[in-house]
Length: 398
Image (cartoon, rainbow, N blue to C red; front, side, top):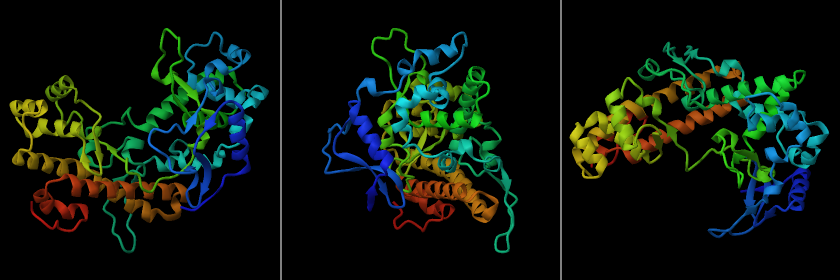
């Protein structure tokens, strides 16, 4: 991996952070050719080593914002920590100059626009119908450019008919939070531009973590237990990972009311297995296996499976694998294939960088599903379904 020295702003920022008690051990920021800014090791790092330590006084919190600025919000209800921090960085004037060495390392608004779906044009959020080309006839299928985990929408009729825009989708949640914060902030700073606030709102969003102040009696909501870490630019806005061993896909949309009835939902909730289903390159998670077996086992056998009394039943496992491959993996894979095909054909109709980002993500999704099918599905089931995933016939039948 070829690395180059980080720019002047980052070197100045490191010194600024050290002057405020931040301790950096064995790592440093660097430009990685073709990958952007990241953090690299100076030497071999041993397990358990503390790489960066930051005193509480060096963190940007509500407590560190000048009182005169917070006074602007007096009498206004509904403000959030996220909105307050973002408005301070956006409209704090000379009061925020203390953080200039930090903010100088941030990406430009133009740079984040390439990678933040929240800032992408509407054409990338709306469905478009598969079009014909000289070499590829139209299927007439409607597809969505954004993956479901981001956009919350499915082209597949097997899911879309019973799945509305999910409150769990990342983009939907972000938009709601942003508009809520801007509604409050625009009352305090009515003549300030929305685009400035959006930029700093996203900067806070990518540079904060959950933190409870010691000694506080009433703990606020999760969304308000936030602070920004000025040392965070050592580790944010770095790689756009082409390979990620921890990648996974959420599967909750596959277990909507059309599949899991109220009785099954209550059973899963009672056993602690309702929701949070995922797919990795090793296959579906155990929570998903439990949910799938509400459809493939009778009530008695399901309860025995949950309790751990049934382990390695070949027939039951094969039936569950067939369900996973048919009802989950196949549907997700076809969604990815259709979206990739349409994005490939779109050409200059779509913004180049966003189109390339989406193509890369859909490619990752297809590859992850193929690996999950190979690693997590019974070989006999694979032999019957491998062509659906553009894979060769498995070598063995057992």
